[in-house]
Amino acid sequence: MKKSFLLILFIIMIVVSCKESTTESQPNVTSPDYFPNSNGNYYYYSVMLTDSSGLNHTGSRKIYYTGDTTLPQTPYQIRIDSLELNGDQSILNSYFRKSNIGVFYLLDTTGFSGLVPDSLQGRISFDSEYRLIYQPLSVNQTWPVYKISVDYSVYQFDFFTVDAQVILKDTLTLSYRNSSVTKEVYKTKYEAMLLTGVNSPPIRFEAFCWIADGIGIIKWEGDSELINIFAGVNIYPANTIVIEELYLFNIN
Image (cartoon, rainbow, N blue to C red; front, side):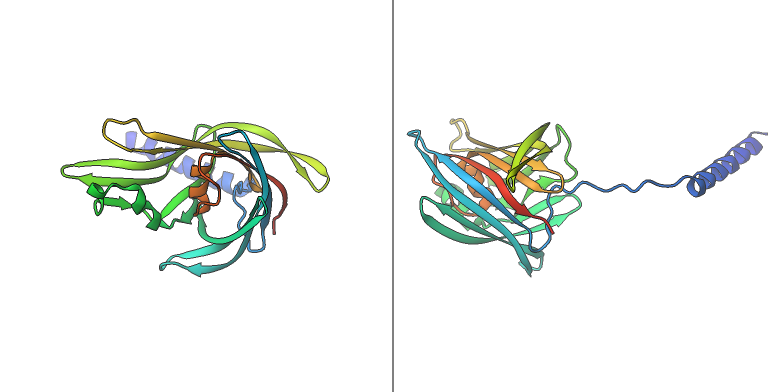
């Protein structure tokens, strides 16, 4: 009797599931895209720096996505940065890839050797990429962005870390083509910690990023040291606070 009941229940479940799959239309669900990455996309940001003396410096930063390459044995898209600050202009390339779990950038690790004391040289380990954005985004979502680990004798510790957390969902008004557009954004906090000694507290850097569906990064604000890591080179002077705000963009 028990076996008969289970068989009947199993048949009912199959019939119901088949009926639901054939009679109910499935809604068209569009996944959010917090990092549109088509070739030809560009983003123009106004830049303001405040140094330790309180002086402000202004400029602009332009980002273009153009073409792709393979480095090393991994396909990347090419990003070109053009920065103008205090009348000086610099152009640099960086490389990123996008997957269903995030946006990853190739990181030039050659500069890290200067951060590591001589006693720890040869004992460090690190990845060649950092994850700038986790997908999908949600409030309170956290993820490790990057870390450098050190093996010292029988101990292992993280010498340098960058972590991210989405702290709130907000709205941000964007001035665009002589008009204003209000967008929902995820405000994300990035925090870096650098150990300088066993008995010394870590040095902390932080930056905030506002990310909108269908556009990408609308604004950066924070310590230049951390924003420089994401740029891939020291584009901003040390000990300054950077504000980048989007004022023009094109999404293909």
